[in-house]
Length: 438
Image 1 (tube, rainbow, N blue to C red):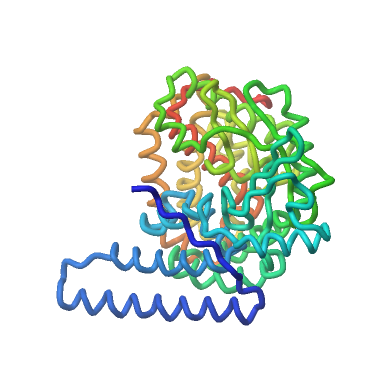
Image 2 (image 1 turned 90 degrees about the horizontal axis):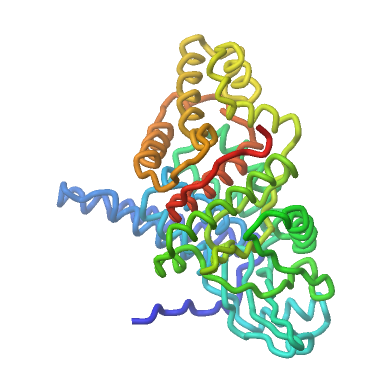
């Protein structure tokens, strides 16, 4: 049976009052889900939390899909981390990567009228009324003009204006679902807010994309679209239409190992060069932003989320990749101070626990850098990663800490490597993991 297409939305709640009311309504439904869950548990002691998670995930995703914007983007980000969310949330929120309910065509026309004083069909020869892809912040339409075919990204109304208020409202859900440390949440929410504000500026995205594509043009097997400033505005972005399949669809064709390795090597080289030569990076590495081709080339799209790495933080962050870091306890401790993992006034026992825990984390996560060739299909390695992540998320010492543990600059860099590792693992790629800075 063909998958049912989401019904286009005729409107999006735009004002703070409308959006807050939707959050409140969802909160009431979640409260009801908890009451129903515990009532069932009284009758049947075998009832697990999985049903509760499924009901809550459904209700929260429905609300966020209707609101779109920053709240839905946060859900998408959380879905990329297999240790952060229960499975029901992870599976549901992953839909935000490329299959959120689209916006109706009249609202798309209204956006074009606002920025170009013309409808899409007055600018292009053809323009699909239905979105070909819909995500958290915008949706993509296919258009043609002369002999050229374009991907036209149109931002949802009110997304940019509602970022700050949305993040304030999504905060209780993050605390309830994730059990996050309040101090860490404060630190990270500021970073997320700043990145999302940048992500809603499509003219900035075009500049970042053009710069990174030009700087990385020498890397084999990468394909970048050309961008068109004459058809681009603050909330509309036009680029070449690239062909290819998203990762899961591509893998269904059972590509040969040689092609998997070639794709994996291209991804690794792309991110390595950005991190260490440009000090800025495409920081949204989920499968919806890459188009895989049978010849082993990759189309790279969506440069909305680009993290600029402060030079001083760069030095501390990548110091831990050096295998010699573990030869000197003093140097290791100093690095942990620099990264905000430990503080001078931490009790000695707490300090030792944190140093031991973060040493284990770093030793495990940077293992691919310490080998000349690494097999990302190694199931045992990823099992260790997930098991450690699960242990880390349950550490009471971290969850109850009165101080944030880590730097806000680490959030998107860690997310970038997690997304990269996940794609390489899905490809089962065996690649050379040299780094351009060593």
